[in-house]
Image (cartoon, rainbow, N blue to C red):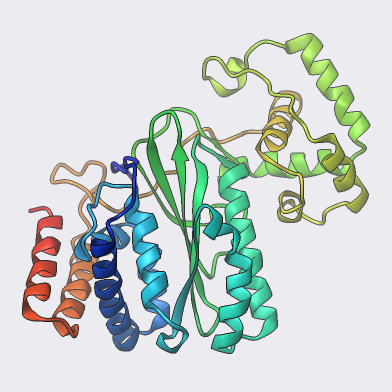
Length: 361
């Protein structure tokens, strides 16, 4: 179910108060365990990968839907509430916690009985999801939160968030296991405060030829690439308006030459292997994309790939007609799990009230 549009996720300073967070741990755990029991762990992961359901879930357990904390606090609560015996665990988190993700995958994977080969695959996914959203999708949002939910069979969902320092808004990226490619349209959804005017999206199918050309460039001797750059700088050091149709795009030359010489020595088999290599960052990838566009005329997608599910549509069909079936199913599952949860009557009523307030008339 593809849904596109925007939703506000402003960055709020400070932390969720302990009394609220403890309550969210309890409520999120109750709902999650019932969904896992009734529908299976894989279905629970699929729902976490749906930006709209994730928003509704965070609202129900008590967090304001329009805050960037929706992501960090909800995933933090799930990390505390879900244990290996529940069939799903959460790893990673915000800032320093995100850097411990590989260790946590190994530790909890062993505890859940996931085979070593699968654990290594999950760790690779963690690395690639962060790399792709940092360097292939250059939308002005820097990642500061990276979390994964993993079931006992090694299925996974990635939920990570970036921050636009200037606008003070957040953007959340969802990935779900079963993707066909890490480098071509891998997201199950992206939710953001707004559509950006200019986004370098090398994950788009439209950028496919550019990816192929970039790979050819790095497989060739970097000395040749230096010659190309010198040529472009001397002949065409203006803006790239004629190629992108957008004003004030200057050519960046912050290329990690040491990394590119290493790439040349290794000769990566494919584009995925290339971007996964150490030292390949946003500036180098951006410069290579520009060279591909300027010299070889390959096409690059500059369209913001935001997909979100908070607003499913409107009565006038904008941004698209309401998908009532999907909408009602999500609400129905949340409502049933609340009613079956081992909570007192007041807590259930409060959660149902928040759910109804979340659902537009």
